[in-house]
Each structure stands twice: as C-alpha cells, then as structure tokens.
Image (cartoon, rainbow, N blue to C red; front, side, top):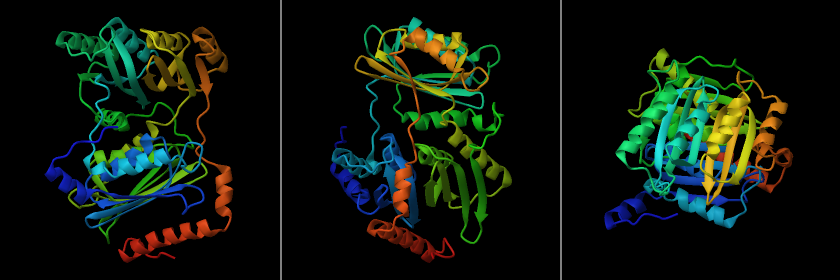
Length: 440
C-alpha cells in the first residue's frame, strides 16, 4: 500500500489530526483490543470500522464515545475463527491504517472500468449480464452483487479482453450501457433499471449500500416472510440530552457494524456514543445520534424511515442460500457459463463476490431455488457435476462464535479483571457526561 506524499501544510494538518492507536493483546482473554483516539470529523468512525472490517476481522464488542471535538473508540476484535490477532505484520498494518484515516486516499483499483447496475432481480439475470459482457469483450476482474426485497445492485469492474486496459472508448461504453440497461429492464422494469459506467474510485461495499438506498429498496415489500433472524430496530428520543437512541438487535455476522454505521453516515446522522455487544450468535447495538446540525430525529415519518433503512442495511448482506465457491483458471466467458448453468437448473443467485488473482478466479455465490427456498441438494450436486466437482465446492459459513472462548470468559482471572476495569471506566465517563443514569 502506497502512502500519500504531503506538502508542508498537509503535514501540519496531518500531525494535528493523526489518531492515536493502541493495540493490546493483554487486556482481554477473548479478543484483541484496538483503541483509537482522534479529533472528531464526520465519517471518521466509519473509516475506522472500515479498516477493521476490510481485513475480515469480527468486532465482538465496541465502546464509542465523543466528547466535544474528540472521540474515543474501543474495539474488541478477533479473526474469523474467533482467535486473537497474533500476526505482527497484520497488527502493524492495522496501526498504520488507523493512524492515517484522516488522510486516506482510495486505491486506484488497478485502473478498471466500473459498471453500476440496479434493477429488479429475477432468476437468470446475472447469467444474462455476464453473457452480454462476454459478447462485448469485457473481462470481469472483480464484482459484488447484492439482492434485497426483489431488487439487485451490482458493482462490476471490467477491462478490455484484448488489450487488458480500462475501457475508455465512448462508443464502446455507450454500447455496454445500452445493452445492460435492456437486460435489466426485462419486461416490467422500464423506469427503475439503471446502468452507469465510470472510472470513479470508490469503496465497493459502501457504494452498494448507497446504490440500494437510492433505489429505495427499504420501502419495497419483502419477497420472503420475516424470520427469527430478522433484525429488530427501535428508535426513541432522549429529550433530556437531545439524542435519538437507536437500538439494533439481530444475528451477528462479519461487517455488521460497518453496514449499520455506513447507513447512518450516508443518511447524515452523527454517532456521538455507542455500545456493541455480541453473545453467541446475537448482536445488540445501541447508538446515540443527532443530525449534523445537532438536532435529534423530529418526526414519526423520519423515525420510521430510519428503522426501515437500518433493517435493510442488516439484511442486504445476510447470507441467504447455499454458499458455493468456484476456484479455477480464469478464461473469457467463464462467469457467463457458470451462471447459465445455475439458471438452467433453476438456481437464483442472492449474493456474489467475484475476484481474480493473477490468472486464477475465486468466485463466491449464495444460491437458492427460484422461490428463495433452500436449494435441493441433488440439484446442487448436478450443477457441481456439470461445472466440475474439483472447481465448485460447497462451503460452510465461518463460525462467528467460539464456545471455547465463551467458557474462558466465565473464568475469573487477571485479564478478566482488567477487562471489567476498562468497561467500568467507559461507563463512568458516560455517567459523568450525563449519558447514563448509573455505572454500577
């Protein structure tokens, strides 16, 4: 990763705003504690959470507090297997990345052309999209696809198959936009289908949230009925302190905090204080928020909108269906062939992540049947037989909860006492700020 070259004025501003980062493995027996102190800027909390989640780390607990122009974040993080961080290079990278969140510049994404697609989801849509791209000599290098409430949003990065360069020819771009929009429209989505081609640099997952938010997916009727895993979101005003209190209860998963904070930030709310706790596979998050002008939520329609948007932010990335992983040598038309096989066997792709390293692809697909129900195992095996058993594997989701770690926390020890002391200190500070009534 290349760090920016700064002039003298930028260096002064950088030193004034550089966060203080402390990473400690001795405080907690279950997780690595990451503490960030910094001057408060709108969006800086999202940047900090983004650094952690982009490394596929799980945030088990978090304490967020903002006092005036300063904020303090404390994150308890583990890897995907529930273990503390031990790789010193990874720890150093986190320290360096968090220390420069005030002055971050996005990567150039290896100079690729970005395609943004939104429209009505249907079985076989991805197959048609990838077939069009293959026919137009576009090589898909990276892509992420989300579906929610019958809508689809996709950010696809492509390059020219022949030259290996970004696609910059205006006529070629016009053809891509026209044909993809025709595919997305189908028979009944003439108005809402959107296709955009750009060279803009963006954070892929944040952009997907923005695309679905702009598409107003949160207002649409869910395709499937609510289940026990559906998020519960409440919003109440704390008149004494001038805050709106947002509580989110849902199933725990990776990048959950990022999704919620991303949505609050893009809706132009400021998080002043927050707590995040996870137990087993459940997560409970509470946020004290205001508008950027310092006022709380002021009407019932606005409150309902916040509830709907936060429910959607949790559900978009929820893993629906069987997880299939395709790892094989890259070739032109591969994605079109694979997704056509899914379509011919009645499988619908609810989420997808496409990546390419050198000449090898790692593609992750979550698939259900055409009605959104669990796919028939016999159909899955038939698809694997067609594509190749060695190439297409059925994978289980990574565990987000470590039962052994839970038993260790119940034991009384020095590390547990220190963790209790840290929690008491945070609660005491919130009490003195008048944000809680008791810290006992």
